[in-house]
Length: 543
Image (cartoon, rainbow, N blue to C red; front, side, top):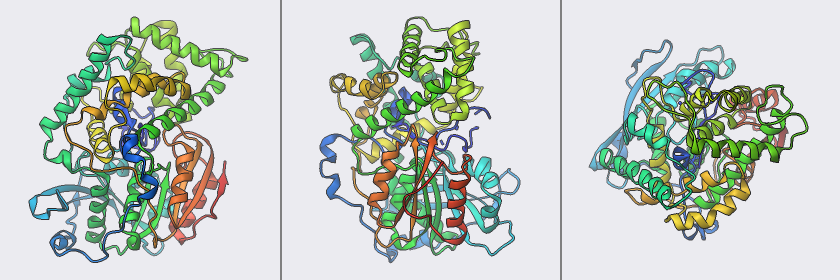
């Protein structure tokens, strides 16, 4: 799935989940776009799961861990953070340890990067507020330093120490490593809509090469980057900071992480906000298909807006959304045969794969639509692909020197561990393509093939679809946006129905996630909950 972090609020800008200030950041992902979209497609969530592994999901709920700390974990829970300056004014950093394998705590450690910005006052300090921008693979520390620690409402920052932990395998916390920059360039340009057996083989080989590189460079860690393990790590950090309960705002994939924490530690769950929610009960096939439909919903909104603008390259007033989609798809096909120049220093041209990723990147945030229109106009009318390449690079968190963050590597590692693969063979994908194309005529084919990436992962999955009830937890605010491309609104409704103490808060609008995106109604409801512990009425709607 493509889940990532909150588009406006990530450290990329760097994206969570990445480089230019005007590029969209994304909160959740899933499969791998499309290669990367492929890895991302399973992501917005957990990972991919086959239907066979999910048939009993409705009967399985995540169980809470014992309230008492096992003796073997006591050294970890007894840690104290040693804060030091970390190069960003106003922020402090520390390193804490967690067991690599919670079933064998004596088998080695994982080092976790933690950052905070202390409460500024006035008002009584309310404790720590953990934040996570999504991904999986987004740097929470980067997000804190670039956005949350300076951009969250002043009254929230006044009362809470703002805290972030890079999940194990991500950014500063022993990052999973796979391909180098040059090989990532090749990977992200691989044709993700194969037209014949040769192109299918090339796509499969790309997935295999990526997976093999991850296995070669991160073999030990690759088995221990699941969402459950990351949630347990957060509890260790909570204890090290001296907080009795965990207060948390998670976006996109961060909602799955936060819900998992609540399911494991309901008695230690404080004020939790899950914005752009995922449904943990779905198998990968359904997750990916739902997300494909979500991108189509977002594209329909873009198309209707585009034709009202004088600079829309896909049609004028009166042009239907269906016609806009067909024209964009025809443009993608043209690029498949004849890529256009970009002026890139490394010689990259704009083919179908990078162009599609660039368009998908802009679907996360409606404020990027003008940038997308300009980029499409340049590519379609002037044969200049630079604008779409910028959007694609932002999505992948590729910098101007050709270096990638480990977002894509961590994204795949977590997704492929959390759930079984959506599909096991190219033949299975070929049969599924019509359903994906029905869900999205523009993006469906590429997203169907992106769902194959976990089939070649070097380690087997440890997770499966399940419900999360978190019985005994304090009220949990679940936020859904009606036209969210990456985490469809139905997922928020489903998660809210599972969580015993959930309050569903709905934003009627476009874009990925809702908090801090311009709705005074949403922001005031969440701020009231964080500051006074007063959750919104269940079913409250904002626009």
